[in-house]
Image (cartoon, rainbow, N blue to C red; front, side, top):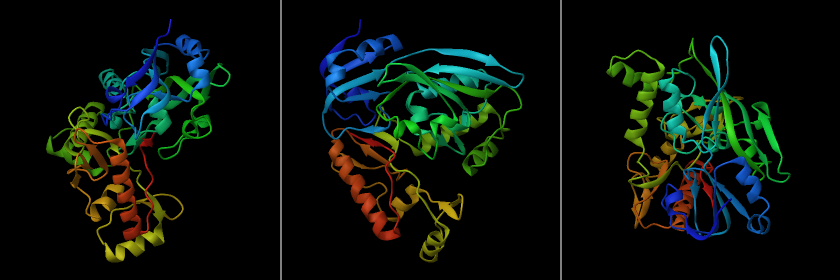
Length: 339
């Protein structure tokens, strides 16, 4: 039997720690509970929001609808080959805990994604990525329930239409699909280790460690902890903006006045530029405005020092975007979902 609560504070369910309230709130522990929820008047008559770890969301006001908290748990091996393993994880599994489990089991492919906040169910929606790896590289399929028909459905990797921090779940299937589990294909032998990002290589060299699943994971954790604040200490949602991709000629024009601008070649004469660098050049890094601000170690991270509101953070983001647009003629895109 499901339990639907009223007027529930969401401060414990979002990493910004914003004290917005949900008109209705329900925790879901199984697909059967979700199917039961779909028949309730609260679901049928109100807008709904599916919530995982709350690490990629900013509440600017109370939510006048039904918040569905995903709590499905479980990890299961589906199949093995000589060099790979297919692992299914329920959508409520904490992503970093799952990565640590795989590292312990010597399953390779996601070690570069260590310490990314959030849940398994949110990972394919955002196509999470870091240090040269994206989850699309290992997703076999995504299982869930079509919220319009109530039928179970499986999407292959190709059907997820993954892009840079993009997927079908943010567009055609937005608010219409409940992810119940994700199956990943990981390596058990002959791992393809990715140390292309210099910071990883630097740490391995400093500690005189050879590249392996464990040492790469440890290096990534060290890097992230040195740059990013712990949400348990300072409210934040990690990277607030996507790294923009601009035309090569635009990049070269900026380089005339800002010769140190970093850039990573993309496709078709495009270059990806770090949004954090752009924001820092506009002198936002470390700035604080009452109880909200820009983190001192990473300009890409907006923070809530305690009693800031979601609207204050959103307005700060708008000002940052406007200054980057004025200075560099580059439009920043939000990575965080605004509610």
